Amino acid sequence: MPSHTIAVASDHGGFELKSQLAADLAAGGWKVLDLGTDGPDSVDYPDFAHKVAQALKSGAASRALLVCGTGIGISIAANRYAHVRAALVHDAFGAAMCRRHNDANVLVLGGRTTGIEVARDCLRLFLDTPFEGGRHARRVAQLSEHGER
Ligand code: RB5
Image (cartoon, rainbow, N blue to C red; front, side, top):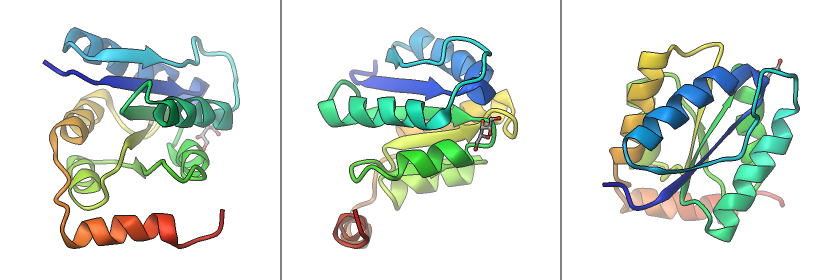
């Protein structure tokens, strides 16, 4: 039984996929913090990346799912926050590797690029795959040390 809360959010381009996956998570016993959007009307993806970044920072959620049309804009937006490691993923291999090597805390999918069954596989692997640590921990630490903020 999952014990953590997962935050989910999307823009209009990701609304349908986000809603389907949120329902799956709730059915699987996850506590789901749905931060919107709540319908198909046009909204701005940076607002929803911001809401998820805040939820992770406050501890309201320990993992998150973000969806926009391609996943590109919302992943760029999410990765502007130093505590966020958001991985835009298109297949099961990427979903496992973003956990094993990158300790990703946000899975990003494209609502217009990824079908529901592939998305379900990606989400399951994102949630179930542990971080390998070791040399990858050094590299993940460098993500916080390098760059300009
Ligand atoms: C919205 O039309 C679309 O631009 C957005 O969902 C996303 O794909 C941006 O990267």
